[in-house]
Image (cartoon, rainbow over all chains, first blue to last red; front, side):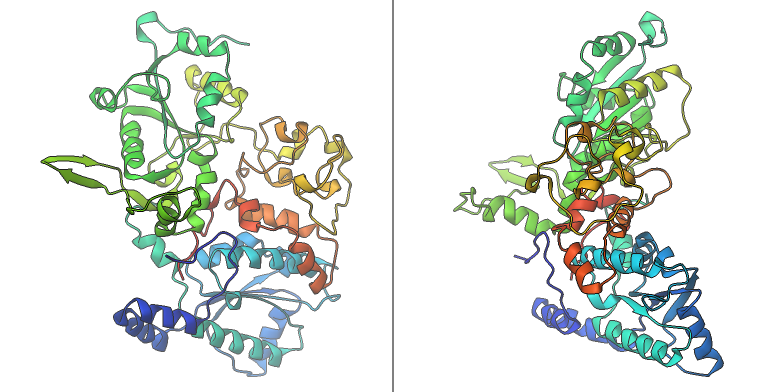
Amino acid sequence: MPEKSHGSTRINTGQERAQKGAQKSGKKAESLVAIQSTFEPKIVAFFCNWCTYLAADLAGTSRVKYAPNIRVIRTMCSGRVDPQFVLDAFARGADGVLIGGCHPGDCHYQEGNYKTLRRVHMLRRVLREMGIEDERFRLEWISASEAERLKAVVNDMVEKVRALGPLRLRVKAEKSPEEVAA
Amino acid sequence: MTEPAPVPKNEKPKVAFYWCASCGGCEETILDLDERVLDVVAAVDIVFWPVAMDFKRRDVEAMADGSILAAFVNGAVRTSEQQEMAHLLRQKAKVLVALGSCAQLGGIPGLANLSSRESVLASSYFESPSTVNPEKTFPQTLHSENGFSVSLPEFFETVRSLDQVVDVDYYLPGCPPTPKILWDAVHVLLSGNLPPKGAVLAPDRALCNECPRQDTRPEKLTLKEFKRPQDVVIDEQICMLAQGVVCLGPATRSGCEALCPQGNMPCTGCFGPTSRVRDYGAKALSAIASIIDSNDEAEIEQIVQTVPDPVGTFYRYSLPTSMLRRKREI
């Protein structure tokens, strides 16, 4: 029987997943490989107005190229990113969520980013229990001058999420025959 | 105590009660109206109440559509039978009320959404330490023998709240709802002065507002460790959170008159969110995590670990109506 248990924090890597699929049926593994080769991760990025969003602006004006997989949403502070926003993004089809804020001590609002840090640590544990891998949810401190760092973070995250494959939460909800729109 | 609106004797409004995936606590609430239940019976005809009265499903099926004034359904929906009854009562009742946390939010049975259907059944019929089942007997939806057949309802993959199955008019929160909440709701329904559809029939403020310990809540709450009620001696006067006990009052709707804090136990969130919140657990998590007294990543992680079961703590009553709804199958 499946190993599902309450509080399980075991995280499967994409590779493990592919292997598991292969054990279930060869056909399923084939389709998984097919999906992964054409798969472009959708990543929702919440960037704070004072640091990370400016880094993204700087990346633009300096012609620093990074993977086009992120959809940037500007918030006044990373502390404005309600855990509901993160869950909503996943539920509506995001394969990953990235939060960008000012470095510790640099928050425009003194301690907004510390609150983000605390919530993110608790939320990550909930996501693990719900079967969403750590690599899909990331918090990074990127200051206004760090366009190169933004590029590195985005590219790295896109590759890691690509390796994991699609999250497909929304598809599952739509397909479930017993579901009725709430 | 005001009297219910007078109704001509031969035209008493009809009321039905039903239970789905629930423990029976919501039925207790009806009995906990104590002698007031006689006032309810004087004002309405109870036409269906499987836990207490001998009416059958065919009796409900024989009624005209919309002939029941209000159907109170408690419990989450997990089986095909519960789904059929939800549809049937929706058809026969003018007003469908979700009674209690399970019907409103998915409730404790909703935590089964952390496990797959297969593992739930395997645990119940094969694996639990108290199970003796050498023949591997397993429930089937249909079994035939000697020309006779018996059937059982289907057990769905996912636990759902009532409004994920049928249209719901009103919600009565609580695990279980308090008699006061139920009594007020019966009055509102009988008065004919109905609130807007979709309303939760309880105050729309946080529990802290009616908690007797409110005044002892410090201006700035910060914690180095979260404690569990069984590990500490809880002071009977001081705010639970100030004592380090995880109390979900700040994120939970009021209306229960702070029964748990008055009984020296922290709020676990059974009244669910206020109207401005879409995902109760996320908001509760946000409120609790924000008061961690540290800016150091390693220390924060250590403090976060003192909540041993975050999903069970923050989504205890609301996993099926959370944004993620169920554990993802990996």
